[in-house]
Image (cartoon, rainbow, N blue to C red):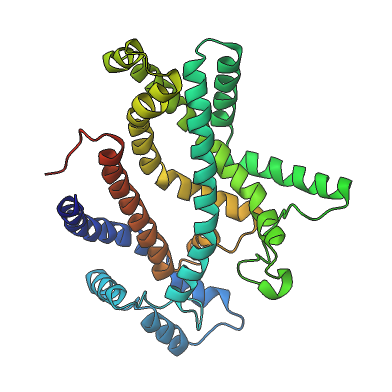
Length: 328
């Protein structure tokens, strides 16, 4: 398995180089930060100042040279210059990643727990009232746009806080407890309160599709020969479900979870913008609006690495869930 993981990582390197170069071309040609600098300042900067700014962000270099300097700089921990003065992109990226990481991991954990529990229960109770209710809830959340659901929860949180006179539900993360501990302190309630609504937003949207995959996979496994054989041997139903059926049924869910990582990161951008979290989502919005090439590339690079890591973990989990799978 270790050799397989090393091979996957080595194969990912040329894929990353080619994909980041193509994305770099798109980002560089998406706008002109030098023109923005020249037109957005009052009074208008001199030609020397504009030329100095272009040199600072490497806009006066050929695209291939800019990419080479950027990718070699990343290997040394330098993510390039930002259009914002005195901004260390690497420090900014990993500070914001810490905020987003907590949000995404909490949402994925809750979504997986709900998806596995509801999916298995729905499969075992096929065509029952509870099965129909879970199916209805899944399609309902699946049809909801992330931005609409986030706004709905935010307004509901504001109403609940006003009604109860409490401020437990943090409806905005403008001063996130992960970034401003002097204001919010280190109390667990502050952290949990600011996590509740954005985590629910991401978790329920992911739970909707993952539940359907779990139910379908579990129904297929429950009808397989080895499960019927286990039941015929007199093994308890609960043990058959947990030891024989569930592990195999989780393989498709593992694949879908890894593939949905990119979609979840996209949902984070919308969710963090609505709840005003200072995470990676806000960073991407700011970088795109300011045509900040290297800041945008830093976000995209880290996102690509996260997707590759999650897909690698999914492949390795296959062998854990199904002992018949071996990586030679």
